[in-house]
Length: 552
Image (tube, rainbow, N blue to C red; front, side, top):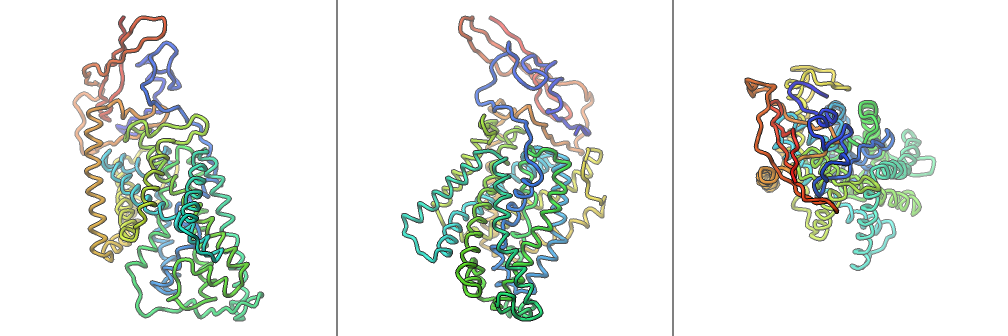
């Protein structure tokens, strides 16, 4: 870390111990010191996520199975679907994956893309990126209990009563919440297991259909027509087609929110991303080619139609196996929807962008309890509300806004922090780096251009609400700065404005009035009070405790 004008507090614990006798070299409280403020999170800096678990989390952050690609076939046709996935894989997915590799290894802390925007453009930009992603992910996550119920109903060919539906949804939410509370290790292992389970029938179906590519009939007697793969449709809906493509090929950066839990970010993140890119593209192309060859009528391709195809062509066994795999897909997507928002909030709390309470962890599992609780409270509220159709397209518009901010952060940080250590670095500089991301910019702006006016208005409303929330947070931080001190055990990422003139005396700190005064009385002792003097680091404009005074 280090870099020009950047404070990285996680590497300064020994220096802080010399300045502030209440903090030891490992960031812990000295026995003779004052108690930490109420709500101070339990230190947790053990990194446990390995490469395979990381691949599982990345897979569900981006894809989560071939489910949902039916809409691509219906709105664009088979040939456009294959070309779109292949093209976006090269000019959209790969640049975003490489961006994630560079910035996650550059800032290996929880919060991910929020920290990138903060480092480039300041706290406000980081919080706005977090707000946009939170809203986008919250809509997505709230859909999965209903999808799980739909897949269960299709698999069992049964219509459930209202009470049974509520029981199934409730059990689903409680079980996945418990998995997240058990710890990020369990989430990683569970995601990997669910990934292998749900891909198993699709892999086998793809291999079987391959045997009918030249004969017109598979080894199991299924009729297969390869000419269906190059069919076009008369009236494509390119706006929805592009939005669904972005939904299926984007979100690479969302796995970065738990970077602070990865064993060796520089070693594990880049190869995990590379493997996941290949896995995701094959996860889409091979099953679509299989199902379209079995059933070529694009107008029938609604969500869940793959189960209907296998019921018709392969029989009940294949239909039910595929249905169970889609239930598992909904479980994995819901699991990692919680990861996206909860660990993002946790990282923001650790960095002092949100009140420190969001960084609070369970002592037994290390899970961010308050962040998960808030995430699930919002999700349950949206599930109970149940009207998502008006904002489904807005979901991708909000994500696209956040994506523009993240890509801009990547380019700007190359200019503002050229010497900052990057264990992985995109092999382009200057104008070539901008050209590398130009197709991604173009795809996002095309999605804006094709969006419905009402959806654009709704998305604008979310952005305005985010600006109001940012002002509330700024006011709260001015009134209660002790709530936003962050967690010392992490490396703090600060914004360095290259356009701001350096102070005349860089190394001198402006001493402020003592704040705050803490009073406490231990059993058998007299009342004591402690005052902290604060100093302003003129490079980073951050408050640093410099002195403790005590009196009886």
